[in-house]
Figure 1 (cartoon, rainbow, N blue to C red):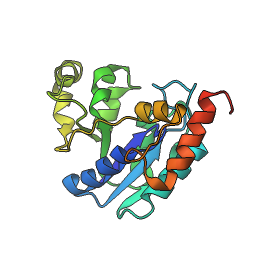
Figure 2 (cartoon, rainbow, N blue to C red):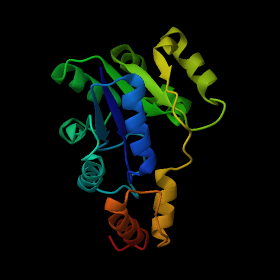
Figure 3 (tube, rainbow, N blue to C red):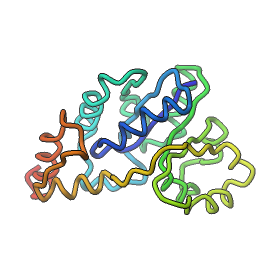
Figure 4 (cartoon, rainbow, N blue to C red):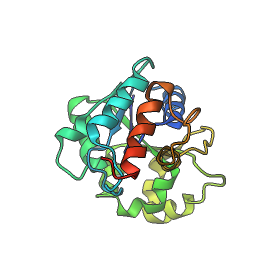
Length: 200
């Protein structure tokens, strides 16, 4: 079984590493593909770091983690970067059963996903928790009906860390120690500080 962990990763941070490594363990994955979104359909491009930079950051922080492969497949597919296209590409080119791993917040707008019913028919959705009490579970049940049975909740710790928090601290020139891997901390802080001041 293979897994796909997608996202904008703008920037990647320590919670992503925890989610990736624990998902491999809990789902007993042969491999986890980390897939940065080329043109995220649900994100503003206003403060989005270039794809090449986000891809480079990811490759560096995951280079020493077993069973993880960072791939740039979405840069080669049509845009916007819909999850369904990505999942179909993996099924055609890898040929394995897949888990598509998403954050719990994605359930709050699951009905806006491109052809979400087809996506759930193509793959199992594994959800990592972000809040106490599963606040979006009932919404997802109503939207998906019987297809909700294909949703798997991961038994992962809730980590109160987001890319938005990282960007805000970086814009203010504050340290990112403990939030972003040391390998990329200085570069991430510099990039978003300059972007916030109009320097890019």
